[in-house]
Image (cartoon, rainbow, N blue to C red; front, side, top):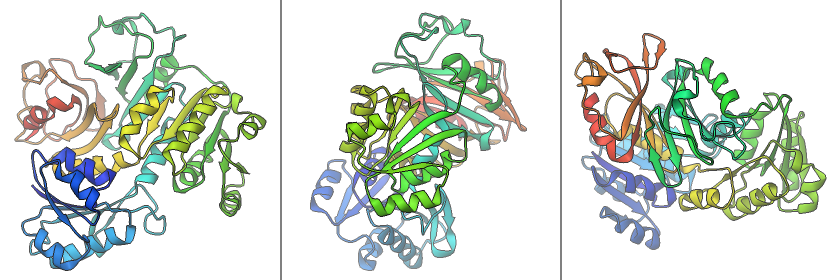
Length: 444
């Protein structure tokens, strides 16, 4: 595909990095520094305004996908609208715009085809939704849904005191509609077998039918047995949207926001939450508000450095589970290395959506886990797919991938070796990055 990326910041750079080897990528940015960084990827780089019609006209010839991910919502929207107006192949051209202003979008991903935007993505809302899904689950550090909610993925961290330490996977007594798809151990990714033993600090990825995942949560985590206590530090777009989602559940919620006017707005919108106007790095404030009793502390300010500091303070003062927002991709692993339970990045939502658009027909959902070490991809099998019509044990599946779940006519199934995938089946595959190309070939 020919792909034009407008904006070479963190998001644009990582989209280019993920796509440049298999596609013809053009990057447009006004910043000389950003252009120099993108140039290292061996892509075509144009320095200039991506919403400029003359620049767009030059770049759009033969383009299949235009992704506008600058720091300006308006520039991204205008670039997509202009591209649709001037492109000769407007019916083939797909446009994606990243936006953050809730005035433009009220859900994580939306369609705005009437104004020339095929996909509009709000990374902040996506991030808030992701965090809300894992909030009340002890030890859970990641969550994702597939096949329109019929398949659930959870990633758990195994604590030192967990009864699972030393157990073989085959002795976990999981429900038939759940499967352990992967173990992450330090820098190693393990496609598990029955005899593999769970170790302290392992991250376990479990995929299964949502109804059965409650048993898995009880087995892998600990039961709180009361309303969970949650503290959110930062009342910006992410913090406010997350608070709205959390306020609908069984939580005792406290929000700390440094801006007084913003605090008052949040308090009016969320009467069920306790909103505090203060600094999340104020140790005395944190102690007074009982941070040691919090089940989860989430720091989602607009500063990575402040989020790290708030999270480490919360951990030091007794917070049970700490989640931090990290806009810079290279901070995600760093945060977790120094003690943050889970670092979450809003940029990954945009990257995942763009990857889905570039992976061809049959791709329904893409979720990256453990900082892009692996992916979980949902495919819809077609009549032409090489995987259709034969037992899975007869399919030459790459060693770095496993078919975790199949949804057949609405029924969720953990497939065994003799299972035969049929046309229109929705297949959820766990795959290492190195195995993705081979897996895709099976579904083409």
